[in-house]
Image (cartoon, rainbow, N blue to C red; front, side, top):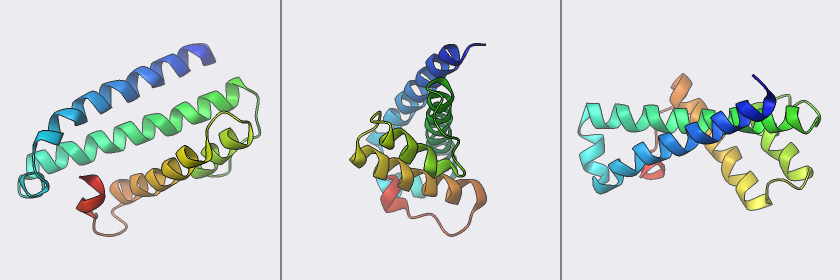
Length: 116
């Protein structure tokens, strides 16, 4: 699989997961928190959307032959330095990467205000 194909597949994955998450926007925060199935689905699809975005960033770095990141968050800084991603999106994706780590490793209790 070429790097360009990987990039296209990751873009498709991000769109797919965001479309799934869009369906949950009709529920209130309380309806999501109080329903373990909804809450689990939202957490999982958020994780997958964020991870796909991280994978996309890493694929673009390889495709553009940019320096290798030492952390997932650094991937977005590298893309910003290369003029590919604006600073506001970089900051947002760095925060989302941290949120992904909380979901993945249960470092602390999730802040559902952020999710909704």
